[in-house]
Length: 148
Image (cartoon, rainbow, N blue to C red; front, side, top):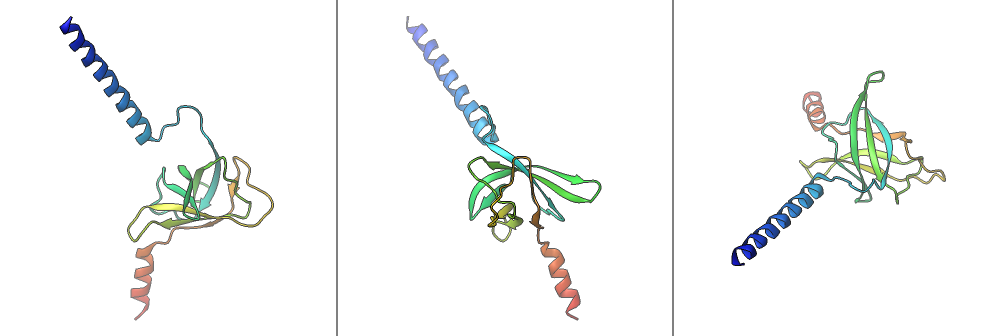
């Protein structure tokens, strides 16, 4: 009887450990098991230097979505960025998407400045107004070599 209690407690402990590990993997992996509560919009940028899939999308400093996919448009040679925006956030048609840096050497993220248009971007729509990433190396070299 004593051996059964020890085996039972070890089994329960292992099951709880596996459940905790599974929960942690789902949370850290940002996996959605029961549907997605967001809609997709796209934006075109001339340069997305440093932006990665999974980067945050913010409005007024509040996270409202994530970057889901980045690809290159082979015809126009522009970066095509797909954003997953929370369903409770509605973007107006004249919203501006710009790539920003968190801190001096921080990660890149997309900041959306909402406009004042009465119409909203539908799911699967596009943000037309964009501002590309600022390349600090290019700015520094321009300043250094053109100042002579």
